[in-house]
Image (cartoon, rainbow over all chains, first blue to last red):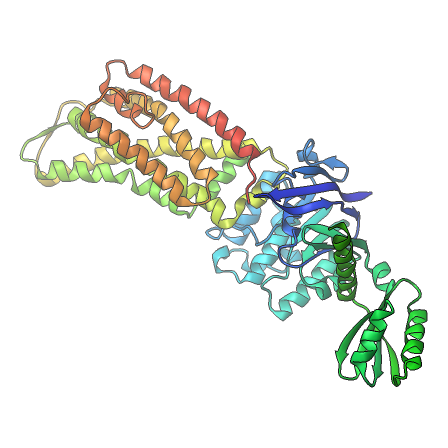
Amino acid sequence: MIAVETQSLTKNYAGKTVVNNVALLVPEGCVYGFVGPNGAGKTTVMRMLLGLIRPDCGWVKLFDHDIATDRLSALANIGAVIESPALYGHLTGRANLDLTRTLLQLPSTEPDRVLDLVDLRAAAGQKVATYSLGMKQRLAIARTLLGSPRLLLLDEPTNGLDPDGIIAMRKFIRDLPDRIGGTVFVSSHLLAEVQQVADYVGLMQNGQLIVQNRVEALIGGISNYQIEMDEAERGTDLLKSAGFDAEHVLNSVLLLCSQGSDGRYQAARANRLLVEAGLEVSALTPQPTSLEDIYRAALQQQNHIDRIAA
Amino acid sequence: MISLVYTEIRKLNGSLALLLAVVAPAFPAMLVMLSTATSDRSSAWSAIFESFMLPIWALFLMPMTVAAFTTLMAQIEYQARGWDHLLALPIRKWQVFAAKALVLLVALAAMTTLALVFTLVGAFLGSLIGGNTLTGQLPLAKLLNLSGLMLASAFSFVALQMWVAFRFSSFVASLSFGIGGTMVALAVAMTGTRQADWFPWVLPMKVLSAANPASFAWAGVAGGLLVLILMLFDLSRRNFR
């Protein structure tokens, strides 16, 4: 079953396209990391997923219910925190939960159940205005868990948290699919953060979804090699002129980035090219790949496509 | 819908809006108390209410209180980013705003009732302090009738005020709108012009002064319903960011 599906999702503000032709596909039961720099259009996409703003083009389906035509069914099993936690500061934590519980017509035991899940029961009687940012984030997430939704949308949940809070939130998100038996769609501008929690990832850049796949598949499809040599700058130029993706890192180090399954073969070819050019290669070491490498590679590819289109 | 109204009432708990709802009706009572305490003549109950309290409430205090109350009510959502949460729940959007409108109308009726009760107490205390007697009968039935008609006639400016308060995130827009409407009504009252009889902020005053108060009350209800429907349609389709 598909939890979230969008097609041709587009939104313009003041003549500027902030979300452009986004086609998301989020399978049920996974953690989906929605990544991109600030201003990439992540929050706008999430607002469209929830029907808070209407797209200029395209459609959104949550569990096969179109948000535009079947909004109540689409939102029936969704919990969401968009941007900052939307909480009433003059009310207690429990009262905030109880308002939503009443609106969703859930049993009166629900607030205590979700307060336990986020370890906030002791502070439930305090006014939210006195909470730290981390406590507010946890309370907002607790509220999304009311009624055991099948899909959680969390927008930058680690924003403003201290290191301990980030670690706790990461573990919390990682465990959520097992705990709620559903899907978590989490946005972030921190690639390393998402890599640690997500099964699937969608990378946004300038309003476009430039990559979407399983994290494992993406990381497996790219390999970096660190090449230690004399005249690394000359070596970088040589490799670039031969069509390799190379980057001069230090005086005697360059980084070779290859895509596809033939990374080892490409590294060998680069090595031969450098040696034949009379350069001394002293070490060739495979480097662990990260989402950052995927993002960089995808960005280069996207820029290349944009240049051709222009 | 009942649960929505219930949650809207609970949101007011501990808010500045609730404080205003209690404090504002005390102002006419304070004025009446000062007046009766310092007067060297006895005052009639009918004059206290019909010539003093109700005109002040209808012309100035009620519209200003409505402006402040709706602004504070809307700011509860804007400051907490409550729209993001509320409008992402599986609830019809128009019902969210309709519940707020209902709570506001009930609050206004409660504030008007409080203003009447406080004035009664204020006049009584003032007469005790000043050693004056209060003459005549308390015109309770007439007061209830006039208050009801006044509330009905206020519906159109209340709906307009509500629309502006919920539509714009800035409290300046809402307050300026309310103050502007009240100032126009005051100018109309001072100049005695007939040109603006149907201006929404003038209608409550017309209920008190015109020979046919019911027609102004009906005009307020009809205008209010129209504005309310337009407001629900507009806000339900609005992109809240």
